[in-house]
Image (cartoon, rainbow, N blue to C red; front, side, top):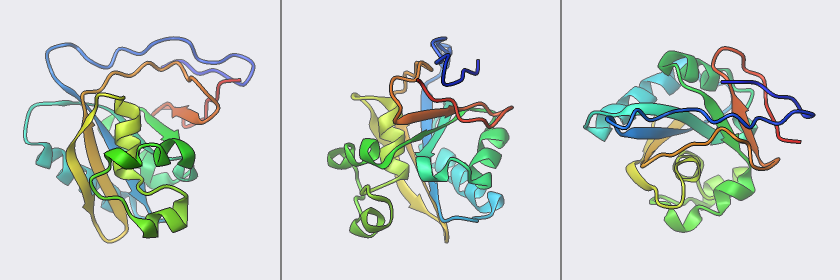
Length: 171
């Protein structure tokens, strides 16, 4: 994936679907300081729950987790990009959530992180393949179908490269 900076927004599309294998997006949430092993273990459990052949295309979360080491560890583990959304973008997904939470809203400003991030990244026609799953300090959910254009369309989104965890924002 190419990197941009504030003067040069990303415009190059990234091919994430080979056409033969369904692409899925993994939404993750976690408390600050959650161990990478816990996040990766929950992610693996969610992917097993998907119960079919798939290609994981992207990991997504709330922008307040943009610097969380466990998120980058998961992206590196699965060799996919990590993208974040702001709370307002995730809150807009509330009508599509299987498990909205007032508690999560009080802490984050959105009624769900894992489900909402997965749905936001997967697009308007997306559906939850795996609704929110929980571990002690993390959440995971999976959405499909997934069509991703790496062009960052607003300042409300950030894209991360697995190899180089630098925030890329459109200017």
